[in-house]
Image 1 (cartoon, rainbow, N blue to C red):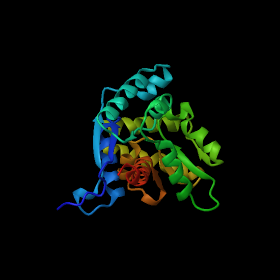
Image 2: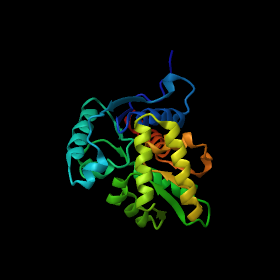
Image 3: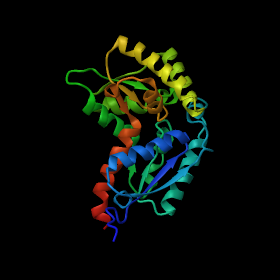
Image 4: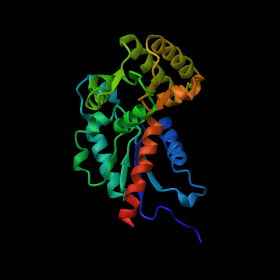
Length: 243
């Protein structure tokens, strides 16, 4: 007879932002669980909504379409039985944060998870970490505000650096991982020549670019890994209460 570790948990994943990042998140979730067989993993339901409007463009144009789309999608996941929600996209959290308190199941916030990981990973006495992400994420101050609350220093690239990062994100979305890796290694060298700090890959395309870059994994704080590990931590807290 199979032994099911997680009897009641159904993690709802709102993905498609982008599809490759969603797939990578599911792999990270599997790794974070560490079960030896299928039945040891939590069940998951994935809504990969590739029709959600471009988040950075919406932020820069003051358009709330992603807010309406993600609210509808998250409520779909709840209606389908999700007991926990995770969204492997950083920038879209700007919109989700505006309504997530309405949702009756726990939500794993990628910003909190990534900053938790950064604070653990940053060496003793270090200034903090670099924030590599989309222009939209920088414009909203998602990470800066939370880091300030924690008295944790994060550094952001200049306009040229943000342009380079947006190009890299586009390359990952287009499946040009080799190009993305080369370009991420270039901007990593630029940033670390100014301040030798860990690199938060705080757009979920960027961990894929980092993986293709050949850089040492020790300098990365992946938002995908952080979200997966935080999701499993929350699942392990919830399951006894749901059983």
